Image (tube, rainbow, N blue to C red):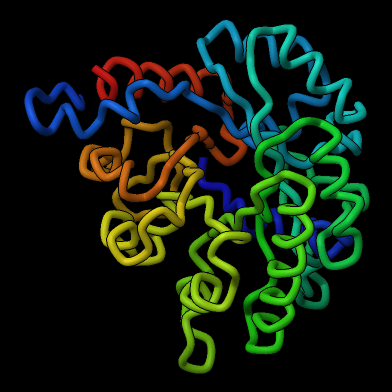
Length: 309
């Protein structure tokens, strides 16, 4: 489905949101990756999971996913639950809750902007969402209460130099607070961060003007590639900075998101470079597909039968 997750986050932000069957040396490079469980970003089920949280999580576990990264819920909180309550549900299904997405700050949208349609074809109705600029300590404390390892900024304004400056300040402040709470803070990219603003590339500033220990990156491989980047080269230039990945595929035009392995991205060299990136966890994501369950089954099959073979 051709749905732009960045547009969704900007829309919600306005409401105060937001076959690797190789052998020998090549295979040895994948040994670390092959041992890692396959994770899923629950934004894949946005607009669906709130109808039956435990039922959807049960089906996700049945596919074989072992780790989860949560995202915004229309129910508020953690799919209508407190952090410990959601953690207990996830653990009870044999999975680990590893990471959670929050928005950096509200976005300013053009006058007359209309909310996009959700998976059901109807305009989305989104309740207010907490953000790091205004609610940083609460979001950090809740993530710590849930026993998470990572807190991730899903997106933040970077359209002007002033917005970039404010975002950098928010990220550095949150990174320090997260460290004190026993969390690793990360920033998740879309393609917009690779578009120059007054001669400066926002993502470069995010990498170089934040504390490298307190603010690491969750690299969305597809969005980076859409933004004209080579993930392997990024790993070489900033080794160890990318402990989290998002894994999705793209069609030839780079405009339509597809299940992993069914598009045009060559994941083999990227996963072969996992060690240099510092990758600790990776999460499959498909931005609100028409059939989320079919998508995650397809992605899981490709990763386990081809990339991990």
